[in-house]
Amino acid sequence: MSNKVENCQCCCSEETDQQKLDMIAEVIEKYKNREGSLIQVLHMAQNIYGYLPLKIQRFIAESMNMPLSEVSGVVTFYSFFSTQPRGKHIIRVCLGTACYVRGGKKIIDRLEQILDIEVGGTTKDRLFTFEVARCIGACGLAPAMMIDDVVYKQVNPDKLDSILNKYRN
Image 1 (spheres, helix red, strand yellow):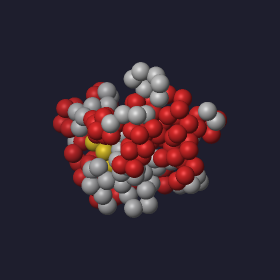
Image 2 (cartoon, rainbow, N blue to C red; image 1 turned 90 degrees about the vertical axis):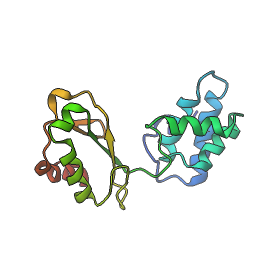
Image 3 (cartoon, helix red, strand yellow; image 1 turned 180 degrees about the horizontal axis):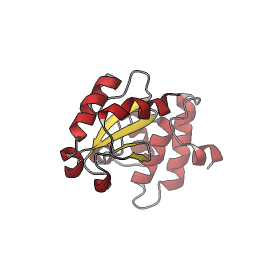
């Protein structure tokens, strides 16, 4: 498998659609005969393509000689996988009990205003995708949110603009 596939982090936007399919085909070739490899293939395909639309799911199913329903079932079961284009940065606001009680809903309301999208949406410029997490394991830091892999603690609505500006540049 080429280093380009191994090192692809997200959306490889400089690649053409056919080049992305070729990279996914390389991944499938490497993993297709390994028991239980579907999740790994889907994960890498999403990193290459950016998301898993039906045409990619169909390509994976055909290439791995499995029913489309099995591939689609895994994609829709795990919240990590997306069938819609996602933003460059993923915002997850925690709505676990501690975060909810300490103002998580206010953070969501303010982010919907700032980003002009609802939970589950992606901004028009595809910079941010906005999600809710049931718990991010930071209860003592509530209310908390994550952007990509960075946890922000004791967030209040007034801090959101300055937090988001770090990702806009």
